[in-house]
Length: 148
Image (cartoon, rainbow, N blue to C red; front, side):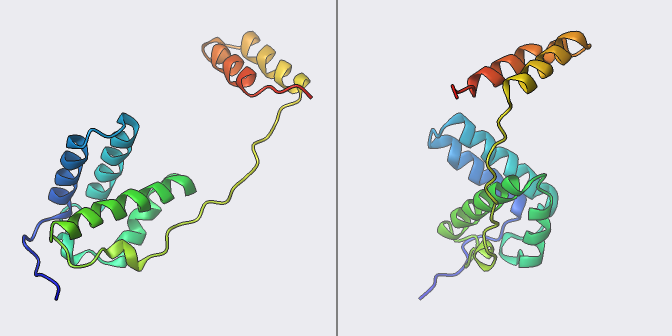
């Protein structure tokens, strides 16, 4: 038999508790940064909604806030973790993210520049007022260079 909701809280309060819990676990700083980012965005979207009243349509709207397909997938993953936490702590009876399919991201093969294309990009950065990105282009380009 399912136990009743222990405490009625807003999504905003849930997100704060989730982030605190994750911080206490000593997770990777990158993971914690993603958790905080997605929690903030969820609060922006539905923060004043009671966690147990969140509906699938609201989650779909939240997912559409993502700037890319991969971010949408991240929003779903971390949002689902937030509501798993809520279920474990009896703030909700079910995880509303479970009602929605996880967004898919199409894999694309990264483009590979030919040496002359890379040279042209370096020259353009050196000649233009883009000198502040020249080092970035050089490092990024040489990090992926493979002999052919």
